Length: 339
Image (cartoon, rainbow, N blue to C red; front, side):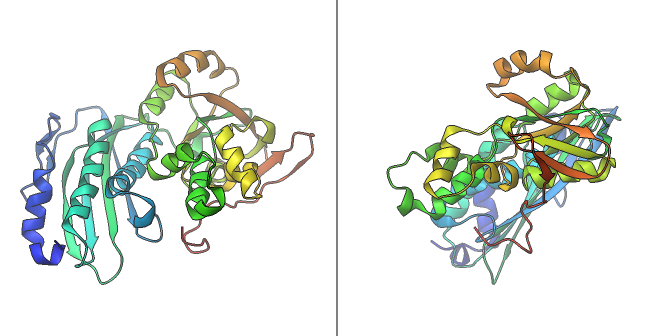
C-alpha cells in the first residue's frame, strides 16, 4: 500500500501509534498540538541542531533497510548534541515522501527513528509530513541541553593541547566503498564496516564523560572527515595542528577493504567522513590517565593523534618523520559525488 492511498492524516496517525508516549518529565506536551511543550531545568543552556538526509545523497534504499535509514537520520543529529557535550531533550521529524512510497517502508523508517530515540533518551515530539516530487528526504531538528556555560565549542583549542579521537577512523568510508564495490569484495568480511556506515553510533555518553573529567578545550564530531573537521577547530581557534599518521587508529577490516580496492587506508581515516567519532583537544597529560576507565566504561578506545601548535592549518607528520600540509579533503555536498 502506497502513502498516496492512505492520505496524510491517516499516515500521521499510523506513525504516531509507533511512538510511545514520552516518559521524560521535560516533555509537557508531545505530538498532537501545533507545538510540543518542553520544560528545561534552571541552569541549562539550550542546544539546537538540524540536518537533512536525502535519498541518493546520504543513503540508498538498495543498501539499507528502512530501519537502518531511520536510525541513521536521527543518530547524526544526536551526534551534533554530543559534539557540544550536551544531552538531547527531544526531536521533531519532517518527512518529504514520494507519493508512491510504500507505507510499510515509512513505518520501518519510524521504527529505526524510535530505536535511536529510545537508546539515547531523545523522544520524538512532533514534525511534519509532505509530498515531494523528488526523492525521499528526512529533516530532523533536535533540541538538547548542557549545563550553563559548559557547552564545548570548536573555538577553544590552545597551543600545546593534545589532539585525541575516540574509536577507530575510516570504517564508515570502508563500509560505503564495500557497498559500492560489493561484487569485487565477495568473500571478504565487510559486515562491521557496512554496519558502521548504515548505523552510526553517536558518542553521546562518552562526550558527557569527557566534558566532566577531561578538561577539554574544544570538541567536534567527525562527520565530514578528520582533515576537514580538525581544520574547523583550527580555524575557529586561530591555531595550527600536527597530526601523526602513525597514531591514527584503523580497524583491520578497514585496512583489508582498502587493500582489496587498491586504496590507501590512511586516506579513509583522514578524509572518509561519517564515522561520527569525537575529536577533541585537551591540556597535555590530562586524558592519558582516563584511558583505562574510559575504555572499560564504553568499550571504546581513546587515541592521542597529534597536538595543537602555533600557526594555521593542519600538518601531517608521516611515520618516517617527514611533514607536509594536509589538504582539507572531507565531504563537501557541492563537490562530492553521490553515494
